[in-house]
Amino acid sequence: VQLQASGGGLVQAGGSLRLSCAASGRTFSSYGMGWFRQTPGKEREFVAHITWSGGSIYYADSVKGRFIISRDNAKKTVYLQMNSLKPEDTAVYYCAARASPARYYSDQQGYTNWGQGTLVTVSS
Image (cartoon, rainbow, N blue to C red; front, side, top):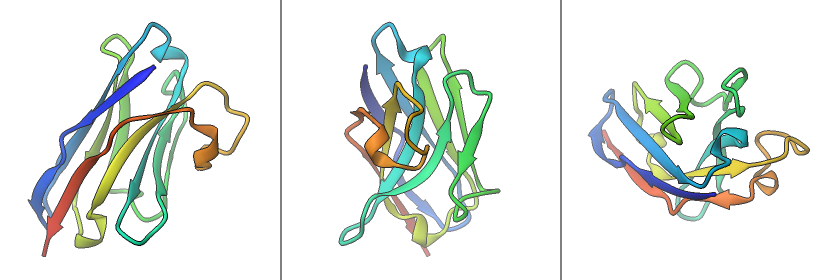
């Protein structure tokens, strides 16, 4: 499956953005999907994960209560609704797919397909 992330941009603190990740391929609905983010000089970190059915969702503590991950398997798209944005949310955001739940959902090594990243900048 190939992934294309979009929706990044510049927003003021307290504002909202919605990221989208469009997938190609017939097996999208069988993949768990995750969002990660990375800032310069730091390791890429887990943001959120949604299982193939949408039945289970997980968030990093830093975004819990502010971000919402969702998916539409008919549209082969996963979303990340980001509310109450903070300057520390500034990062390049990546979507990723994994076919197997063998690794912990926040473990990047478990994801086999990655999008190109979309930049989110939150001004104070």
